[in-house]
Length: 316
Image (tube, rainbow, N blue to C red):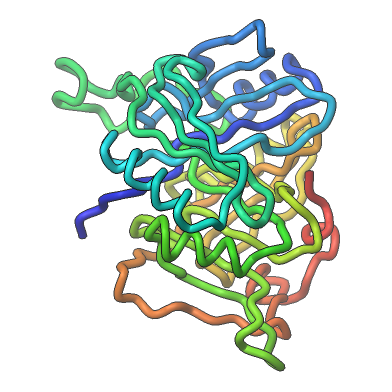
């Protein structure tokens, strides 16, 4: 499958109440690596070990927790310009603006816009390649399976976000018809199968690159997720969370939706994190999986087969 257009989630900027406790969590517990600081804007830039671009997670000190924006890497500067025009033409988004080169370190210009659910998204084509330090005879030459110096949970990559907002229909229309995503899974009401409650969208062959849940709010953040390679590593992550007295939300368990094996926990500011493994390969011709609202229990928590209200109602 040739992946063109929007390639993948590239970065996410998360608001934290205090930078140093947040850094201790994201570096020492989660196992990301700090790569740059912006003292003027109170930001720190981090990456996971198997990511090849300069950074994927940005922490910004603020008065309120949550997500500032999610960034998507596209395949070329020409695609960036083309998609910016398509987004403007669609009239589905607000607050369209170009962010200049260097506002993020080692990153080209970005096109920023607010989607119908109130979330801020941006597209970019260029970010400095730094590699993963696995090569034994130069970058990407005769590589080891992982680099030296891993610490904490140590996920391989930033994977996706799940977001809450009101205009789910407009957002799904934008992602499918303008940005070229496919709908891997959806949650609908059984009484009216055309009324969508949740949408799991992908621009790749993953089960999802972003998910949206319909809620009467604008721009809310449920969780940011990071990939691990196996169920054993998810269990090890759970042990690390317990050893470090990190607040665990749910798990370890399995989702029915996406089939992911997972554990959820909170950073010191109350932002929810997930580490997960598994899922399935999604090709564009794979039919959309449908879940009814009455089966949300096993859809979200396949083992317990019942809903956890705190999991659904706590967000930033």
